Length: 83
Image 1 (cartoon, rainbow, N blue to C red):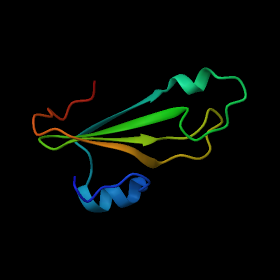
Image 2: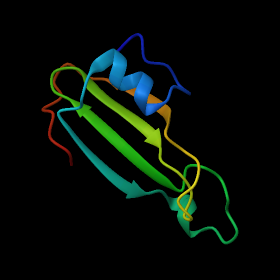
Image 3: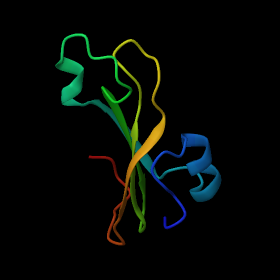
Image 4: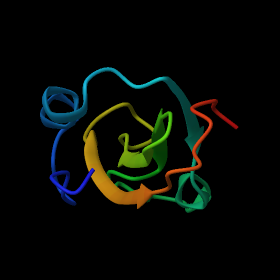
């Protein structure tokens, strides 16, 4: 987890940590801002059992952009199940 940094792509994270134990996708509050074209209206969280979570900006409401790390949450008690 220490090697994963903000701004990395999903491919780079998967090369370092491997496939996630579980994952989920959801809309952020920015999805409801009229004319918002940023890349983080959608988010994805990858869960790694016993390691923590990696949260990605997963694109805008039109399907473009995203797929970069927003934050890394180290948590050795992570169950690995999406919530």
